[in-house]
Structures are given as structure tokens and as C-alpha cells.
Length: 410
Image (cartoon, rainbow, N blue to C red):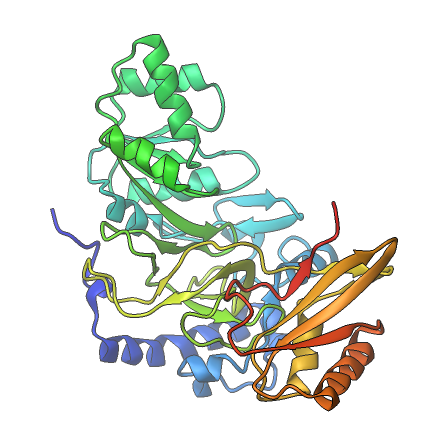
């Protein structure tokens, strides 16, 4: 039994840069050649020029809303896939609606890596409580387990007592599902007097893995680790025995950008997660997940050397309606681009009686009336709405990725 799934997890920084310089232009070229949507989006791009993160950051962002619109116009996948419907093994429909293909080959969502880091090994039974209908979550974990040559009980969600009885009967060794449902199964097993002592591992995603829940599992002697992924790109990052952030998967490139833009942020700054997938079937480029996270500095103590992120930290799609008009994070970013050299900005939407209010709070070492007036004029020009500006000391705003803070009562 080895500590790592493969040697790629422990590559040096130079090896990673060399591999990226080779893989990135090939994948961009593949997307441009075989996915009609990217042929149009990247029409003027020479893929061979995209060899690093800086070059990638100049490419357009693909958002979920782009997929929804394109799929409505050109069924089933809006031209973003490199294979046709007849060439893929399964298709799915997630809320939105957004329709996804299953990639061709073994472990197309790459969850074997995350399950291995949890402790799953050949021959162990995975009790899989993710849904198998409409959305791909159930198959994502099953395909990962099968790649590790593990049997799978396709439990799906719900039916807690039946879940506990099945887990006891088969002596399931590893659970996969949402963070809280395992607790329900264990408590049901306790109430029924079942022997669930074989269940020592858990892999959770799709919900908040709170500290109290971690303590509950640890107190019962379970190792329960989490991952972060989406139906569109599969595994993005996963937890290891170090328990210090989530390590990015080897077959995606993760960027953290200012919400509503494609502008990369420095390490440690909270922003939106963009993912470029190296999947041949569904080669999404700079796909905006709508989730917030931040890069953790350094490498994981477990020996894995890929970039780490802090995990899911909220939603980046913070658009809100003010006086009947939508205001979006990208509009705040546009205002700030007109005034370079400033720090973080946050648009606070409030209520004065029955009237919506907007206050743009901006970090700046220069605080004078002329700058405030200029920012207010830019805010009005971009949003077509009037607001006031507050100039703050650098570092005054929290580092939480929030660009629009709607404080009005729900």
C-alpha cells in the first residue's frame, strides 16, 4: 500500500511547469478543433502560444449561463463537447438545466484519486449514497471506486434504516455521500442494534463538512475526508491525511479570479474558482464554477505537491436587483478598472425606508473627496444607478471574496 495514487502527485515544480507547457496548448488546440463552441470563441487564438497560466488568463471565461444558453440553442451540449451524443456512454441533466456527457474511458471524472487519498483500496466495498438518477454524482464516485477495483453498493440517497441494514449485511468499509447523511446512517444502525464496525472510511462532498461533524466521526474512529467537484468537470480538489486544505487534481488547472471577471488574484485572496479541464470528451476552458475559494501557500505536508485551495467558501454569483435593475460583480470590477491602484471594493446594498441604497466601499491609501466623486460617477455610469462612496484604509474589508453584499431583509 503506497501513500500516493501515482507519481504525478509528487512532481517537482519544474516537472509541473514542463508538463503544463506540453499539455495546455495541446488541450486548447483539441478544444478549438473538435468543440464547435470553442472553435468560435478561440477563432483568432494560436493554441501553441498558450503554454502557461499567464497566457491562459487572457482567454475568455465560460460560465454556466453560457452553457445553458448554448444548450438551449444547440442541443444537447451547445457545441462544447468534442464528441457527439452517440459516442458517449451516459448523459445527465443537472439543475439549470445543464446537460453533461460522461467522458469516454476509465474513471472519467477522476474520483479514484480522491477515494485513494481517503484510504479506499482494492477489494473494499464502497457504500455509495449519491444519486444515480438525472445527475452524475452517483456514477462519478462509482467509476472512481471501480477504477480502484472496488465493489460498489449503489445505495443512492434516502431510506436511512435500509441503508444501515445493507451496510451491516455487506460489511461496507467506506461510505460516499453528503457529509451529514453518514451520521444519519450510523445513528440508525445504533438504534437498530446493527454491527457497522467495518465502516471505517468515508468520502464526502456536496455539502458543508462542519467541524462538529468531523468530531462526531473522529470520536467513532472513522476517517472521513472531503473533496470538491462539479458535474461539469468532475473532481477539482481533494483532502489528504494532512487535513490542510484541498489538493488540486492532476487533470485540471485551477485559477482563483476576481468574481465576475477573469482576472487572477494573488495567492491567499478569496475569489471565484475557474477550472480548465484536460478531459478529451468535454474540454471546458476557464470554466467558472460560481464558487469561492483561495489558494493556500506551499505544498501539503503529505508530500503531494500540487496547488492547494481552502475548499468551498461560498458562492461568487452575487448579482442582486437594485431599484428594478440587476447589479453584478463584473460591473463593480469595471468601475475599479477605471481607477487602477486601489485595493478591494465591496458594493453594499441596503434599504432606507422603502428605497434601495448602494454604498461602494473601497480600500485606498488616498482618501480625498475628488477620488470619491470620481468613483461615484463611474458607479453611476456603469450601473445606471446612483450610490455613495466610502474610502477605507487598506485591509479594512474582509478577505472573503464578497463583492456585492445585499444587507436588505429577505
